Image (cartoon, rainbow, N blue to C red; front, side, top):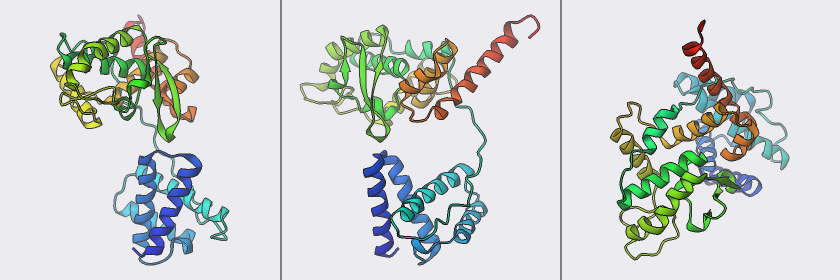
Amino acid sequence: MNPDTRQLIDGFCDLVWLEDGLAANTMQSYRRDLMQLATWLAGKSLLAVTQTDLESYLHYRYAQRASPRSTARQLSAFKRFYRLALRDGRIAQDPTLKIDTPKLPRTLPKSMSEAEVEALLAAPVGEEPLAVRDRAMLEILYASGLRVSELVGLHLRSVNIDMGVVQVIGKGSKERLVPLGEVAVDALLQYIRHARPQLLHGRVSDALFVTQRGEAMTRQAFWYLIKRRARQVGLTKLPSPHVMRHAFATHLLNHGADLRVVQLLLGHADIATTQIYTHVARERLKQLHARHHPRG
């Protein structure tokens, strides 16, 4: 790839980061998608691309059996790139203007029943430092619906025990306050007072949750933790942290929470993202009706 193309892509990523404060993962996806297109163009400038070029590339992706979802994501990145290029006068016409984003089938997120969540939360038994830490992390995850990156990224200063809230830095560096509830606050308090100092072994750390070595908890370590605890209580479908986030949202809606409130708690910028959970809740209601109604 020639330096001019790389510089063009870098400049685009810097611009959208400055304007929108997008998350690092989103920026990496944009960069990767544009580099793949530039490689396929075999020397033709990204700024010289036509609608026909892009349609040919999308057909190539289809022939390579790329998933419709990843292709739709790539097209979204291209639309963003050429919209900005048009705005800045780099091109005279947007080649993506007449290319429609394919409609994807709506897939319901995996979730857990309330009984399964209760079993998982009860898995860390005892007062050993690791059990106390695991209990606190699982309780906070279910009480707040945090993303795993948000959970492991918490600092001591992120938590206000007296108010029972946690300050979260979400996607796009957007901040939100999320309530924890009494059970999660109590579990967190026990961890901070007793287990955390023992895990740190005299070290100093800003991270709220630390490993047995006194280092900040990582996403990978927490994935392992949650699966190990699930196996411990005999759950057949091993949950991920994201499945717990789905359970948080679904259970709130099942118990009558307002969709806008769930949107705020999850940190979704668009309520359309949150609306998927109404389908999950509706499916749950159908199952309950079929099971318990005399004519179900």
